[in-house]
Length: 396
Image (cartoon, rainbow, N blue to C red; front, side, top):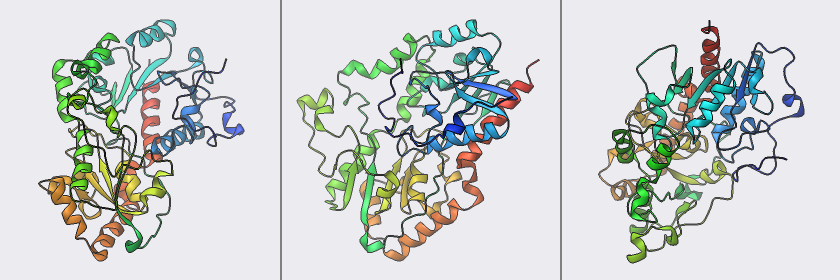
């Protein structure tokens, strides 16, 4: 029986050729990807059509392509059996710790390796050291003290630079700004019930993982989902006609228990889900909203800002405290430079074509520079493979 695919998988798979599906004749090393909660089967995680509009797909395709070029067989568990592998690879922590314990007991020979690349808001427990005891090597975004043979730090974030040629749509023909994000119902006022704010921590602990209260509070305070709503309301308040809001969850009916008593006004500039190609859509705007969902100092930066740059628009950035180390001030607008979203929007409305084009061209120069190189899919792939080779070579 064919396992069901996640709902976000594209129906028309174009990423893998039949030749690429064939196993290597005599691999130097074999890596089996644990199916996980998202049911990775049939090498779907290495397919460009796995998730629409995601640089993560390119990174995983690059990982498998480079692995094969180096004589490493890398595939999902149905393609590379766990019992025949040198490494069993976990892409983020599964819901239940018992799943890892069972794999460790059933397959004692392969090394267990974790890639903890998800946002801290989504997996706050991924950086908790006690959750790494079952793994032989751990890739993390956050720098963790400990055995250097066990911990391998990933490059800042998991933002993979796409390579399309930006559409050169004239400044006068572009709409003002676009926000493409889901309206996540997090926080006390947006939960369906008040006590639901504790659901994530309860689910993590019920799964057998450790999540200290201090860590849970740290991540909760760093969550920035609410800034999406605040920005959208500021644009509404200024009556900006050519500001467009796309994504899931902006229907007032999903506003939480509080708004059942104090109804939330509709989002006037919401246009529904984005059904077009993301980069194509971004290219028709002067500015693109690129706030991250977490603003701590853990090295997390997603594809948002790079999607905007690749589409030839100017990103509006907010996120990791060290974001300016990676994104030059000349090619982006930083929320921290303004006292409010209204002040930011009023300033952007005053930009003329010369100022906008200078910023946009600086962004294109940055994408071609060495500064953007660590964010390319091939760089990520080589970094991971270097860590995997090192783990096997260090094994007695």
